[in-house]
Image (cartoon, rainbow, N blue to C red):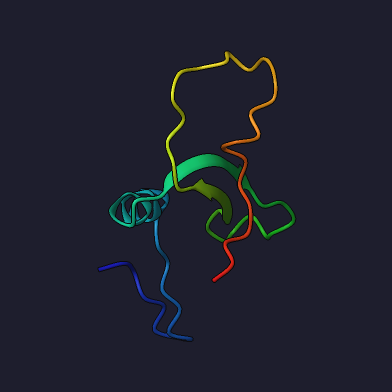
Length: 75
């Protein structure tokens, strides 16, 4: 169970927790980035870009791959 803040009942989930959750949901990590501007005493806050299909092959960072670019999922 993730640590709970008894003062305001916040729950902190780790990076590895989220990555395992994404995996269980069939999502793949496209990119991650740390959010800036938070006080240093707080845990790091991350942003995750997810895709539904894992990349096949590698373009070694060259060229544009539109097929796997993250987008908003509309239902």
